[in-house]
Length: 276
Ligand SMILES: Nc1ncnc2c1ncn2[C@@H]1O[C@H](COP(=O)(O)OP(=O)(O)OP(=O)(O)O)[C@@H](O)[C@H]1O
Ligand SMILES: [Mg+2]
Image (cartoon, rainbow, N blue to C red; front, side):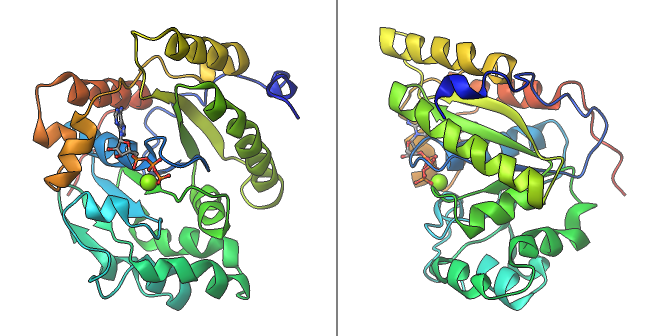
């Protein structure tokens, strides 16, 4: 199916879901290097700045989200692997960093194989989140660049999906495959999961190519495309080296502001609930 093949589908973005909190949002795109991890961390910190309780879940064996908070996935002894495969309570792998973060480790690379023979293999994350979901306003799940069992677990556990897309033509084509996977998830595992929005990243306003890529996104996906654009800047690569989000690394810079803007768009008027 070409890009035009999904035009018939509603291209209206998942509505605000206003005060409904305790939401799980997956950051997914099987294409590598499109800013899934960068968006997970910085959106999480931007939500937190607004007074929301946020849990980040690193579901990528590369462990980039874990690393971007200054931890080494090679040396953490218990991780999301143990949670998914051995039913370890997720609380045991949550580290308190800028956000609460359920960490990844290299073991997670073996999770797909270990899960594949288990009953309920697609629902391991959904089950793991149940006991902690009510403590958080938002749970943001970072996924690996594939549509394997880890990403399927994330999509099954989620209320909605944010899809970061690099502003270039070749990145747009992968969205059809992601849409097809989401349709299968809706049919078989999670009937209500929706695309919360498509986020243009690494936007370079000086190039025609970036502008054309966003135009093409809007032609094909309409209102699903967020108004916020994340511009290309080296700040996003510098911050993780310091083990921090860009909101902490350069709080008043335009890179931080972009994720605050995205947070506003995603929150769409939702306000923090009172926490005990
Ligand atoms: N807006 C941006 N401008 C410039 N560089 C960026 C931007 N966003 C992210 N980067 C950098 O691009 C690289 C890829 O970003 P990131 O790791 O967030 O992508 P990803 O989709 O999670 O990758 P993977 O698929 O490997 O998990 C990182 O080095 C990151 O610092
Ligand atoms: Mg990543």
